[in-house]
Image (cartoon, rainbow, N blue to C red; front, top):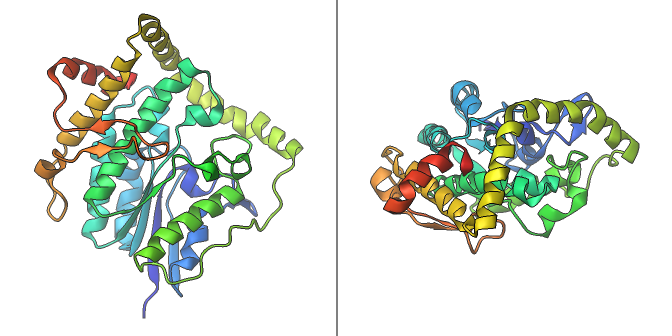
Length: 322
């Protein structure tokens, strides 16, 4: 019997940043791999800083060539941190990746993620636009995961997400304990459907956590570089978004920004093509995703047709405000 082929696609989260082993990173996907079955061939294609574009152009072709039995695609946070953010493009890229992998017969793993503004503890006017973008991505991921029958992890809230011990010094990447929690949660979901026969990953860290000095040193070197690279790209627009946020709050029209973002997500989902073997474009347009009951979820309904009064807002939201 041949080995189970497990391929991981994504960004620094799946690459394993925050879980150092030797001179490299390990991460949740590598921790999960041995628990899938007796013999697993694991390939990690995830790259720090990757966006949905990088998954589609570089990682997906390599993954398809490996013909995986299990494939994880956890991506999108870096898209929200760029001035080029467009939820329509993100939705189209994710739909293409999910469709290609499931068409080959792979079991697909996906996850929604916490918004970076909350994790970083940014002021409200700066955090809310990022939160709105992440909610939009999460709504798309939720909906497409349902469309393609993915094993989907709701990793947006709960005490296990907010526990500071689960996060590394940069507050954006899990620590070893956090990566182990992600692996354990994915294993539990796979075991429920009979797609994981191995022992669950241990929740207990193998290595001691970095000292406060080591954490501060990391922030002063690699961490500072990470912030500078993203500030060059995002900061001017984020300041504009924050100004819009404060202006709407002062006028009492803050809800309009949420409505605009919801309309943009609806339009993005409605524009997706029909897929053989999936729910299909026509059916997808009728899917209503209500995340209000999901801890840390979108908190909005993503419907196919935006109200006429919101269509102009949808264009704005899709290109930055949302």
